[in-house]
Length: 129
Length: 461
Image: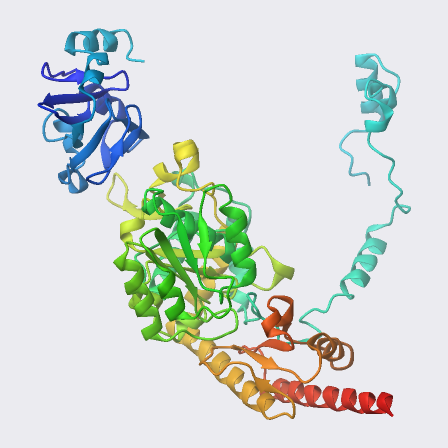
């Protein structure tokens, strides 16, 4: 299982990488591996606002469809349109080219509630549920 | 011969095993009031006697075998070639259920795929689903889809008042609790430009029917203008259409429709006393993941051979649970098969002929009826196979006399649906009505009115 030390994580296997008041968000290597081959990612539109824990995207794989939850409150600045034609990027590069959205973080304090990479690794080793 | 699967001795043995004396004892704990009531049924009949009784009951129906039919209004009397029944009666099709296992369901899957492909060709759309319960539910599903395409943000639906009134009721029942505002259909004066005026940024879809409930066709200019107005606010343009009419007229896809749907019964399904029918549903590729219902796709297997499989199932209820695109992930497979066999049998030219014959015969009938004293056409718009006629005497009286004295199933009393249409009858003519039948109808109408006037004058004296 790959992880990225520059990200923070949720128990629903979403990651966020923070830069200033912006965050880039995607699903983790663990999540893509559980889902298997991803065939479609439904992403929100720019300027859509979501609260922490709200469904902002849906991932469809050959065996399941899963909802993705925003790790913190935020407003969408951009969605990764490359995924429309190349959803497999989520499988091959979940922390890089397979990102889902960039958001403006409304409340940075919420970031403190998320796991760092060591905590996330431990969480996954315990079973990831 | 007894049809009860266990014998008296079996029952005795079972009762003895659980230690009660009779079936009555078995239910002692249920208060008597709540036990199954006694039936007051007549004495049992032999199979022969029962068939005779059922035959007698059947003969009370005004069936198409013994009467002429000029009734339409959503269910249509078109010819069904006998090959349709031969194919759908094959036990492989007749008894098969959901083709979840493609490895044992290639035949069923292929028929659904072919049905879908022909519906696409007919409507000018990119994808069609495997069918819905009927035209009305297909419309309700299209509206739910439009709501989902707007990500549940746009809650207004603009409906034409000329859509079948029962479809409009089903839409309201079906979308209860979704917070939708349904606008436009309760004012019969709302024509295409008026509907255009109702479209705003909260509108998720605009729905029209052509030919409409009254048989009238929308013009290409009206359709295109509504489509443009809908698209300008990112709303979907939904068209309800009689599939037979699509054999003759340009498909709604050419006028900007995003979804085309309707009642599929006219395609190879007999009237069946009102059902089961099928709703056909087709839309543009862009909405395939938001569409309702089941979808079958063509693919290749591990050996590179052509095969068929249910696809995009992740939208469906058995996988997606409460976030599915629809409650419906089933289809009317046998009815859709009948529609598919019908379309394949008729072909493009055959279907066009059916539509042309219906069109010309309906226009002949309209022309003749309009010349009768006291009768006139209610609308001057172009029409397909149905038209509303203003009648000089109450429609109910006219229909009763047609049935009683002339053995004709007359048209629909439009006053039942719209007070503005009081005294109007909606007549339908298809390729099944011969010229002789139409002339007979015209004569019947003339005679009934003459008789009625005579009686009125008599009672006035």
